[in-house]
Amino acid sequence: MSDQDTTKKVSSYDDLYVGRFLKAGNLKGRQVTLKIAAVWTEELTGERGASRKAIVSFEKTDMQHVMPKINGTCLKAMFGGDVTQWIGKRVTFWATDTLMPWPRSILHPGLWLTRH
Image (cartoon, rainbow, N blue to C red; front, side, top):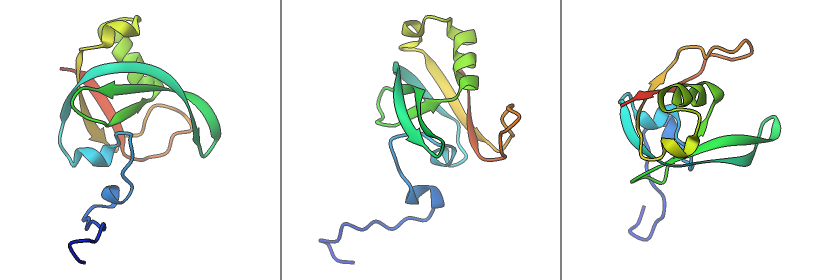
């Protein structure tokens, strides 16, 4: 590798597939507290085709969270049903290998959150 080279050495599988969305591997075993900057919906295309997803962005990072319904339900319980009132609230994320509570879920690392 030369000084002109644009390659980057990585040591983690999760670092191979960096994107705009926060995922369990980004946390590297830590709990991370973030302040909500915005909430919106966006059509995303995945393995099952296109569908509208809830997106949350945070202050001081470009990372965003594609919010599964269970995390949205938690935020609603903590901060109310008016999502504009979520702005400025702090939430703490941590990674888990716990099976998410949906019948068709598979065991994979996921993100859980709590009020900070």
